[in-house]
Length: 254
Image (cartoon, rainbow, N blue to C red):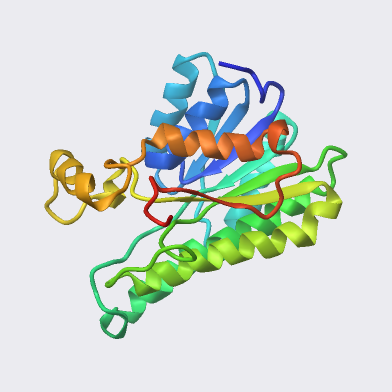
């Protein structure tokens, strides 16, 4: 294990479970001070405890990414606690699935837009506002999905629309802010070993059987594999990677 992020401060939204927790743990393992953000204090505290158990420096902050005042407070807290904001990973997202586009409840549509798109936008604004004040700039990685700009399937039109928007927003914002020393990229995971990839009533074992035929790789990605992609994009090794949308989906969109 390297220490690519020693002395760096990293903010991760949606860090209470799944990909967000794996990303937070991976950054901490490589020397970063990590702020784990989300809406549920108990799960965030679990993430922090896991990081601290391995010797990491960590803190939690409860925030709703759809509220600009929460996001600004989150960035302010991060800087006050650890002195800078060097990397931000905008991972918070929700899934509403199973209904054709014309039958999706309006409330679900608005929730998807609010969290998956507006939430990322508000985080970007607050993060860039801080990073542009730092001589070293910063790196931002948005978590999109292979469902969107890369793959479509029935029953997920609204979710697909929001994640395609995240991919496009990431690329557009990357061009807007690279001259300020802020690198913005996206990671688009496919089916990953989280509850989000489980179908209703499906167990982990059932999913494993399904994925043998559904994925060219024959399995879901691990959360650690997604985290590795995020850390690469945030690292010095990716210094010339700007506006990329790195798909990690076992070949599903190949």
